[in-house]
Amino acid sequence: MTSATRRPAAATAGDPAREPLTLDDFAALARRELPPAVWDFIAGGAGRERTLAANEAVFEAVRLRPRALPGIEEPDTSVELLGSRWAAPVGIAPVAYHELAHPDGETATAAATGALGLPLVVSTFASRSLEEVARAASAPLWLQLYCFRDHGTTLDLARRARDSGYQALVLTVDTPFTGRRLRDLRNGFAVPAHITPANLAGSAAAGSATPSAHSRLAFDRRLDWSFVARLGAESGLPVLAKGVLTAADAEAAVRAGVAGVVVSNHGGRQLDGAPATLEALPEVAAAVRGRVPVLLDGGVRTGADVLAALALGARAVLVGRPALYALAAGGGPAVRRMLTLLTADFADTMTLTGHATTGTITPDTLFRPDPGRPDPGRPAARRAAPHTDRSHG
Image 1 (tube, rainbow, N blue to C red):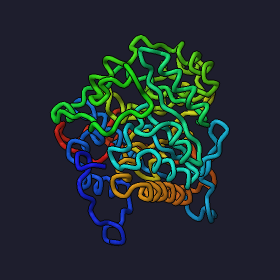
Image 2: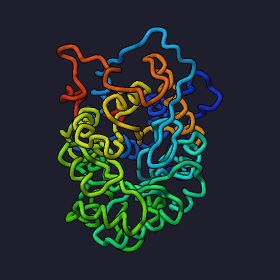
Image 3: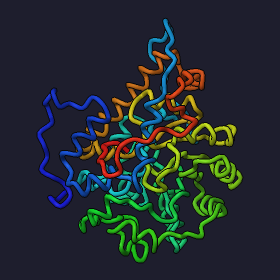
Image 4: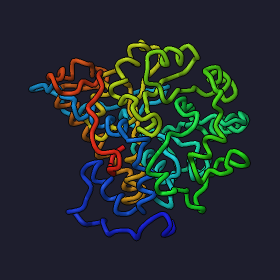
């Protein structure tokens, strides 16, 4: 990676005082490594960043119900999803251009997740080819898709994913164009010229260095739920809908034939003022009624967050920004450490709340909030000034 995208690396290896112990530690290290405009592109959100802040604020309001003498030596953290067994209910959410954080890009992320038996959702705007990422992977791969005006581009990506061994497609349904991200506008951000969307060509790739303008030209705003069936038929792969926040959309997605629903607000990068994902989760899970698995992304930073999401109806969670923070802090080994910390924290939280398996985690694991404390099912108090940098997404 050139100096246009990365500062000179700080010496962190072997320094116990700087060894990351939490996902927030990786964010702090990444902020020191990355140029300010790249940091803002990764860490920032839409508008005044109210939804970005709410994603974590609602998790912070959760209180867990401990269990004394649970009699559990080692909990089984695994889950089964779409026919695959995950070592823990945690995967990497689709995030564009991993090479912004480290020159090894998505191949490093795939190797790290594979070593732990955890899945990776590869972005349409990956900086490495689908095939190259597949060669580096040894755990489930899913491909996230935007629908381009030229549907052939999207369908070709889906077929390439199938032929490379990807197990599912994740159609983003909340992005007819990207949200108004003020940090990027103020910075005049453009993806450095040496980093490109490796899987796109022609009109689909033209102008992609400026993501906001590109999305308004390239994405199909007329897209409706009928595309789910076409995408599944053309690829032969199960299709999940990512970006669902309401019961009505959850019901529409299930009627359209999705294999799963991802409760997501695009990491607070789309509609500012939309609910936090943990706020929306109970409504969506109730509407789905167990017909397909529900996942969640946005704001997950601790094992307690993972458990809270499962308690409120998710089968698994996806984390996005932490993967790029870890890449920036130390490449693939740091991604592996980040995921190891998160899954170990989840295992400890399972034991302390009395759960030997993920299947027993229910809403009863959570205390009802006290008056004045945000409820995961109600709007959270917003925090932080709109121009304030945050290291969490």
